[in-house]
Length: 289
Image (cartoon, rainbow, N blue to C red; front, side):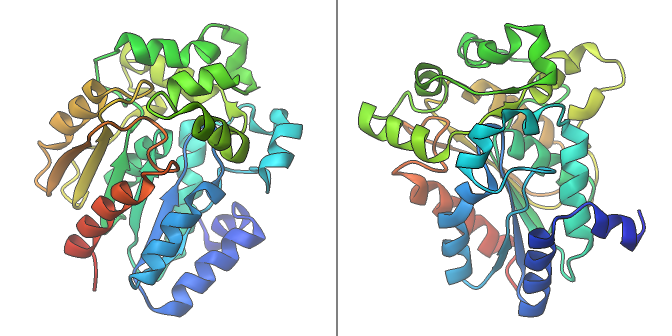
């Protein structure tokens, strides 16, 4: 990809974040969000990492709406977004950075973070409650139930799909009280592309691996921390543990940790700081300079 092509894939605000990170001279941290969120969901994490001497950027998925309100008004903007397309968008931003970045992702962002690590371009990677990649075999019933609002209708593969509050409560906020669950739903929830869920669901039936394939063997993968939420219904610990067992064969440092009592909302709910501190400590040990 040429420099012109790289620039063309990024929005003006994303280019500005890259330029600001480069101008700082600090180690950059790239945050990757998953389905049903926008990049603005990382703001508290960004503030924490910047307070600790890092530059941060949080590109969106290609053509993400600017705000939660806009996203809810135009669910069609999420249609047809595919895992490799999104990965390439983040790789385009990373290619413009003057220093190798730390990459931190949640859910499908956690899968994409591991794909980016497999490209050998990350100084360190933190993958939180990652969606399953090719070779991850466990498929617990709670994960199937959480994905059912999308996978239950094949036409959703080409749509942007919103969750009802009840679906959000089960998949994301099952460990929270009703008041906080509703607050998170109103503050953060947006429609999501259906396609990535279908890609993940069929990956192990694709002899070529499909777009959720991760290069876990690349010796340049770098240090990797996989964080799991003990009570996550969407990505149960069986999935994150299977991911760890595959990645642990890499010659690089691979660490797995489980946060007790936490669900899929662990990056945005009242306990976000506990998770962020785990990530920050790993990054400070393995990527700070």
